[in-house]
Image 1 (tube, rainbow, N blue to C red):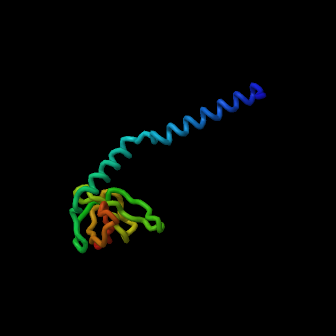
Image 2 (tube, rainbow, N blue to C red):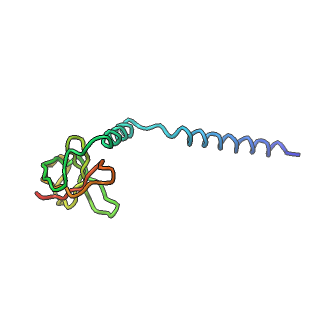
Image 3 (cartoon, rainbow, N blue to C red):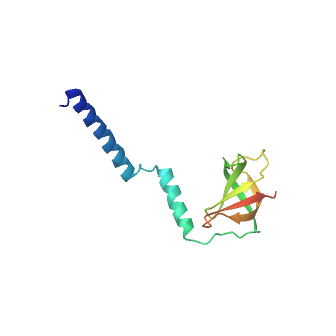
Length: 118
């Protein structure tokens, strides 16, 4: 026979499991920034990139990010299309304008990699 403590513990565990399962099925609510990023990504998947490999563009640096290799990269955009720029000298800051050359696209052509040229 189960005691009252065992029954309370069992109900508590069931409630925890049910709340975890509900969160897992529904997913966590997205912030406005996450929702906007997701919508931009989905839109990018349905269009051709506005740049081509080998082209040079003058772009403004939006922000800096760290590549998985640990290298600092500038994040730039051409017509809303995201371009990660390598080899940007450290004295540049967000909003500075630089010249880049497109090197390649990621799988799915939703972003590109470029190198700093001036």
